[in-house]
Amino acid sequence: MYNLIGAGLIVIGAGIGLGQIGGKAMEGIARQPEATGKIQTAMIIIAALLEGLAFGALFLGK
Amino acid sequence: MMKIFQQSFKSLALVLLVFLPVSIFALNEGGDGGQVDTKKEVEDYILHHIQDSHDFSLFSYTSEEGERKHFGFPLPVILWSSDGLRTFMSSEFHHNDDGHVIVEKDGVKFAKIHSKIYELDADASAVNFDAEHHATNGHKVLDFSITKSVFGVLVIGLLMLFWFSSLARQYKKKQIPTGFGRVLEPLVLYVRDEIARPNIGEKHYRKFTGYLLTVFFFIWFLNLAGLTPLGFNVTGQLAVTACLAIFTLVIYTVSGNKDYWMHILWMPGVPVLIRPVLAIIELAGALIIKPFSLLVRLFANISAGHIVVMSLIAIMFTLKESLGVVGATGLSFVLSFFILLIEVLVAFLQAYIFTMLSALFIGMAVAEHDHEHEHDDHGHEVPDAQDVRGDFI
Image (cartoon, rainbow over all chains, first blue to last red; front, side, top):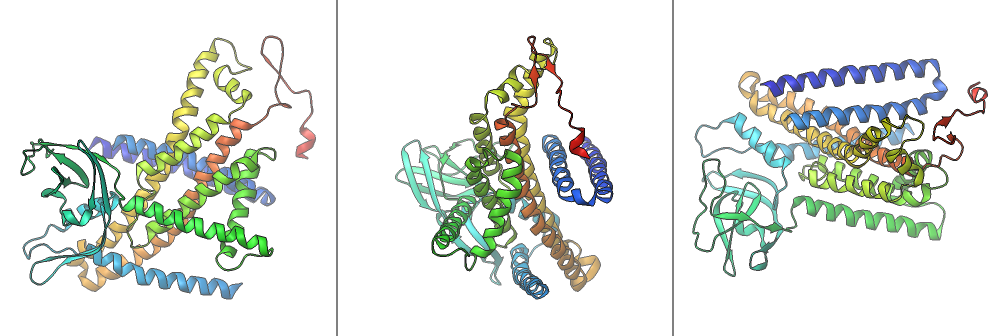
């Protein structure tokens, strides 16, 4: 029961984080379309780090 | 261009259409005519798929006479028992997974319980279980079997050896590769120019490109193999992803230069009292957290993808009562079709991220700081005198 609540909290946190990353990247691309490639690479790396953290937490809480 | 796109989309759709029903057959496991707990059966089936297994079964069903029919082929079992090496084919267990079938080889008895092989005591004639369903009169043996995952690794390894050696041979004859090499060439260039070169740096990238290419294609092909109904789940095994992460760990630890270790063990530019604390954090980060995040990310993504696809396929059984046969099958088909398309993307993305982060970690270890940090006599960092504002205008 508690681990389900924990899983929900993890997903909420990860969702907020991913939303921030994606949203800011969109803003950045809209402002400087010529930097799209660099922004996308950085975005994917940070999203991957966040995802690793979230999966790690889910994995440990299982 | 458009035509090629249309054609490849058509063939992709065709492949999915042909393969999807096979996965569905695999799920159609009726009981002995009595009441069947669909939910439990679906759970068992998904868990069974996620695990590694000793034989390669494609699908199975119960015939009219109540006989269980299995389609697939057995794989070799190689065990190091207390009395030495024992080998036999996994068909000798007759698909039994709860210890009822005991195989005796040269005086040593083996039983398979939940995909693990136990060596029974010499005088045992059946497996005894305690309250938690652990075997009491046997112990696990060292298992070097060619399991389904090992088989998958071998097949993909041989295919990669064949494809890439033929690609390399084609360059000796002429500049442009033919056949499947034309698919591989842009990807090889992509990994070299977009992943290795910018992250590791112009000076050192050549040495590590071989490893990055290998790990990229290995993960990508195995992820794609996991989407076929052959039922591979190789990159969803912790042992496999842990092994890959350890390769990356060893490479960046061994090739780390003086600056890298300096920044881990005695960070320049911060007060001396904080340095030991930072050293502990940096050491844990470099030796534990980095490889752990690599291995958990790949494992969790691929496992989660498989579980989602199989759960969506299972909709046609769990919702059969409320939606009818056609409605449940249609819903399950549409949902699993689109999730499978997304999984094709995820298969590439995970291979890319693993390679990218490996390149990043290696790049951190070999980076040279000859221009950035200048330190005074006390080890404090002196800000760069050079004005960099011009670079941004």
